[in-house]
Structure formats: C-alpha cells, structure tokens
Amino acid sequence: MPSTLDDFEVISTIGTGSYGTCKKIRRKKDGKIMVWKEMEYGTMTESEKQMLVSEVNLLRELRHQHIVRYHDRIIDRSRAIIYIIMEYCQGGDLDTIIVQNRKEGTHVPEDFAWKILIQTTLALKECHQRKNGKAVLHRDLKPANVFLDAESNVKLGDFGLARVLHHESSFAKTYVGTPYYMSPELVNNQSYNEKSDIWSLGCMLYELCALVPPFTASNQSELNRKIRTGDFPRIPSQYSLELDLIIRKMIQVEVIRRPNIDAILADPLIQRKQDSLA
Ligand SMILES: CN(C)CCCNS(=O)(=O)c1cccc(Nc2nc(OCC3CCCCC3)c3[nH]cnc3n2)c1
Image 1 (cartoon, rainbow, N blue to C red):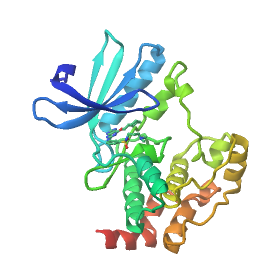
Image 2 (cartoon, rainbow, N blue to C red):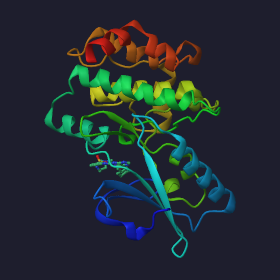
Image 3 (tube, rainbow, N blue to C red):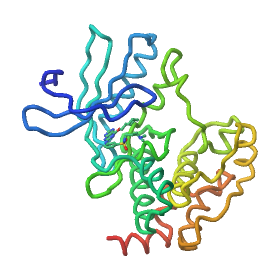
Image 4 (cartoon, rainbow, N blue to C red):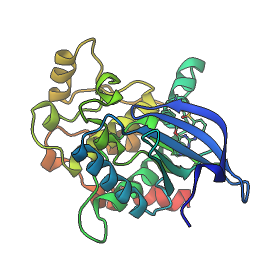
C-alpha cells in the first residue's frame, strides 16, 4: 500500500539542500519519526525525470546499516513534487560537528575519527561492490552528507541525488560550494572512479580531525594547483601517527597508489582499531 502525504505530519524543516527541502516528519500510524526530501521535478526534461526515477530506484536497493535507509516515495503530480521518505538521523551531520568544534576550539576524540572512517568505508564498500552489478559511486562524499544515528553510528546519505542535481534547470546549478574534495583526476578532467570516492573519504577524515580541508585556497586555480601537488599539513599532533598515515594513504595523487575499499579494510591499522572499537 503506497504512502500518501496524509499518512504523515510535518514536524519541522531541517534544512534546504542542493536539491530541495528536508523536513522532519512523523508517520501517523505508529508515530515513527522520519524525514522526507522534497524535490520539484516540474522544470526537468523527460531524460532528467528518467534519471531521477532510476536514482530513486537505486536508493531503494541500498540496504545497509551505515547507509541512510530509503522507505518510500510520494509523487504529487498536481504540484510536480516528489517526496523521498527516509530514516531520520538523530545525531545530525558531520558538517555541524566540525563547525561546532571549530567554534569551541575543541577536537573530536581519536576513536570517534576511527569509527567514522571504518563505518563510512563499510558504507562505500556496499556501494562500490554491490551484489547485482553496477557500482554506485557516491560522487559527493562530504561532512554534510554523513549523518549519525542516536548512537553516533554513520548513516551515509544523499546517494545518487548528487547525480540528479546537475540537470540544467536545477537549483544545484546555482547552489555550488567550493569543491575542496575534488580529486586530482577530476582536476585533470579525467573520469571519476571508485578511487575518487577514496580521495574524498581521506579529505573528509582529514577535515574531521584538522577542522579544515587538506587543501584550501581563495580561488579554483590555486586550489587545483594545491590538489595536484598532494601536499598538506599533518593532522593535529594530538592524533596518532597511524591515523595520519591512513589518511595520507587515501589522499594519494596517483590513483593506482590509492588503496581501494578492500585494501583500507585490510590495512593492519584498521584491523587493530576495529578490534579495539568492537
Ligand atoms: C548542513 N547542516 C548544517 C544543515 C543544518 C541541519 N542540521 S543537520 O545537522 O543536517 C541535522 C540535524 C538534526 C537531524 C538531522 N537528521 C537528518 N538530516 C537529514 O538531512 C539534513 C539535510 C541535508 C541536506 C541539507 C539540509 C539538511 C537526513 N537525510 C536523511 N536522514 C536525515 N536525517 C540533521
């Protein structure tokens, strides 16, 4: 029985993303707290709508403990809006945590950083090595897309939506942040691949520890130059050499030297940490 808008009541607006608005909702029948993301499709071409349909179908297939769970979708044809209903992540997003620590002059604990690294890598593994074939690359891995549940476990969000965004008339075209996590292969106009997600993962872990991205600049060409060098400062000295080392392995300019998901999970540094965090 597909859901209808009447099955839910809106509690509050959480925020507006590059694709539309995210609202906190309550399912009336059992009081379950969820979110829906509202996307206007009225200005989309037929092919963009087709892309949206296939992205939403991908979302519903991604079932993993560290990926935000898709529940349903509601299409309001009269207003040309699609509502994508997903699990609510009570812990908010990593971007908010980074901003808060920067403001208070504090740092996240080392074990928290390892936990985020391990759980986000497991979420990416699910996407890169999907059972029935085609890998789903995230393409937009960043702190604002990594959410936490009530126990601070990772819930990777907004999969695929990143790809839908770049249709001509979308809000996304205007709504662009600085691509701090752009990989060297993207800077050199080469193709995006699974290792590009690994580069972004390394950049995200770096920012979680250092509270600033590994590469910063006041303009795109300066940023591109720094990214091509691959040179960046060590994470703050309070963090272990091992954590700095694993981040460095991911932020490698040469794609072939960058570890893939399985290499990261097999790394002795991770193995040892996984045991101690378990
Ligand atoms: C970027 N942030 C500073 C925005 C401030 C807003 N706080 S916050 O840190 O996202 C926050 C606070 C409390 C609960 C939640 N839970 C949550 N949020 C989602 O998306 C947020 C949305 C993503 C696109 C941009 C706008 C916000 C979810 N998507 C699927 N499940 C979700 N659960 C999030």
